[in-house]
Length: 304
Image (cartoon, rainbow, N blue to C red; front, top):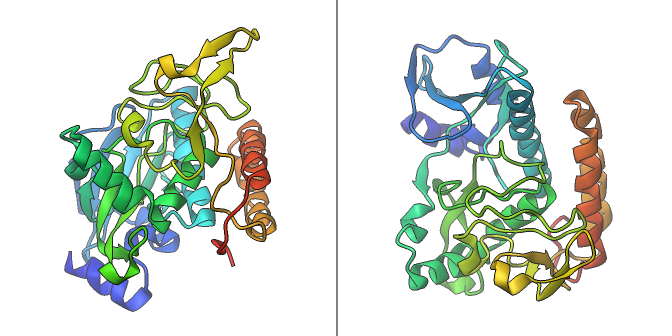
């Protein structure tokens, strides 16, 4: 919309990424509400306001699981801010803060535009142009920290408003920036959406949606395929036969000097996790960060 483009030019960031802007919209009465398709775990509506503002409301079930999902969506957006992944800003819905959130609406195209055909060439291009860019690596870092196993191609958007540098050839201009969306299924250690496999252990073994197996999604710089693992009873299993078990990469793009900076920023989120009664999830997130910190081997700073 023209109003979004004008806001981006004036403010430097699009309105959907501005938490204070979304918080102000959340206090207003929308002039129009429309039901959106998609979203398996929430009722999703597009809210339109006087003056051209647009937001998305996600309403989860009125129970403990709905409360967890709303908290996960909100907290994941805060972690995204810390790592620079540029997820849409999320605030609690003032009319139902325990079970509903309001977030910015990202303008762009779903990742299915590049991965929907399940063609090996398209998957390779998606990995080259998006997952290996700085923006893509930040999405991967976000997904590891928040234990996200739901980053299929309908849970990221190619932005119409923001550009990013390509993976290696800066002289080739820019690409449209990938934007992560839909984080209600994070901070869990249960069955993965789309794969039907469980995490092998809480110490860094992940399983992946089937689509991710072809190009490892955005986590390729942070996780690697594991050959042989032991299950929780100590019995050796062949991870290759599972098709999607990943472990921490021996080296990752974090610069050693990034570690204390990122640690301090994540620790600052602890009160927010406490407010949502998710301190256990915060502790597990910091354990995942410790695994990444021990493997920091980048040559350029991500968090100067």
